Length: 111
Length: 114
Image (cartoon, rainbow over all chains, first blue to last red; front, side, top):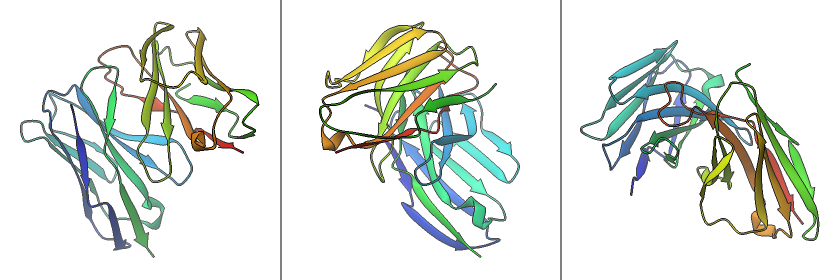
């Protein structure tokens, strides 16, 4: 059974800092990995999708990497802003019809 | 159109009521999902529809009844719910099987059972 772990559970940083969120998974036989952002009481917004054959994806200030063999992914946020404050969820797709989510990292960026 | 639209955004219902949640997408996705999310927890899969047929039911109680009338629409019918069913209900869609675009989620329905 796939298990996904995200570290840290919570992170508080000053504005402008670069930061890294970590995600690890137990079964390396994945199709892809997707990072989501969730604001309180809202739905999930897709940030980046990395296919199993890819090593990284970039969108603006966000960069996600994938090391399938070691079961790890990182989400790098450059020059963080208060608007980046949210919960970040890592989700692994191992069967094509089922996402396994981590518990999330709650990020607070202080002005 | 790259959105999944869920209605209503908020719903308060009594334990004897019958209500329905609605989800709509026009991205041509043929897989649609219902997830339940409790506070401070990740989403939990409830149902998966593939080509308008129920393919996965994660042992969800029968007081939750899904329906997929067509390829764009997904409903969740609610009856005789319990207060512990209060949660954020999320709908998602994707291409069937391996998707190069991943999953698209709606903004959710906040359900409160009183």
